[in-house]
Length: 345
Image 1 (cartoon, rainbow, N blue to C red):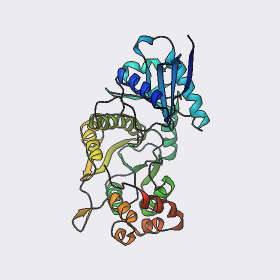
Image 2: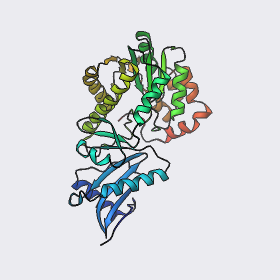
Image 3: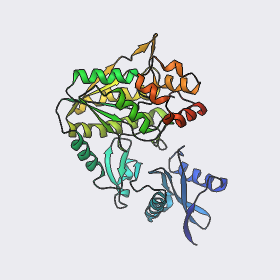
Image 4: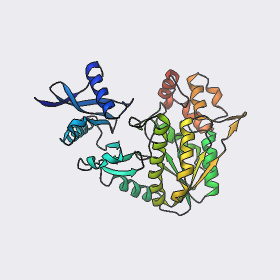
């Protein structure tokens, strides 16, 4: 009997069914974000499998009858090479706490852990290097505040949140989610944010990097339901944020009330419970309204989607409007116009 590793193509329904059956036996739901999958076979029987989405390793499973035979090592090695071929060298994975020890000999190191999950990367000092870079940009100032936002795009609501934090606290760290997850690129979102906050002298803007987790890439495949996955992500995100807060002297975090997004509302619930335990006070501000409705980035995206840019006039600063309607944002407008959904789930 021969053993070998090969790709499991999306088009091969028989192999896909084998992978689904293996994942199900190991208590794992198939992740909806998979770009490449592989399997370790004995003749035509699938014994182990794993997948990639961008720079994250996902849906890693070994048949229970073959645990301890080094198959996970082979799958991770194969996926690492596949990721390198796609241009990704800094890799991440999420696993259950009971399995984390299996990945340390494979070159992955824990960043943060919560009851449901461990977040790991393949750089021993990756997260500490990130903290040092943040400190080099803005040295620790005790009593500082933080805001984490997508600004997709930057609205008067975002401006109100930042302006309030900057007025009330000596320094505000803005972590702008830098992962590319939207038709509006990070470069455009950063440009809109920078131009909309130039007068806020005590605001420091940081890219979130790979550590403040994006909903778009968070793997929920081994959690029972979507709400549980959202809460686990928020708990993990909070654990990472508290390490950042300790490095930068952050004692306050500002968020807006969330009337539209179920995901963000659950996030806020977790933050409210967890941040004070880490010495960070949570400030939840009422959403800024216009004509009786909360200003929402979703509403701005919907206006672009519907071909009605005049609707954004009272929702965004003039600097955001100019960027959104510029030649630079032409591709983003076209992508929004063709998108199936532009509102929060």
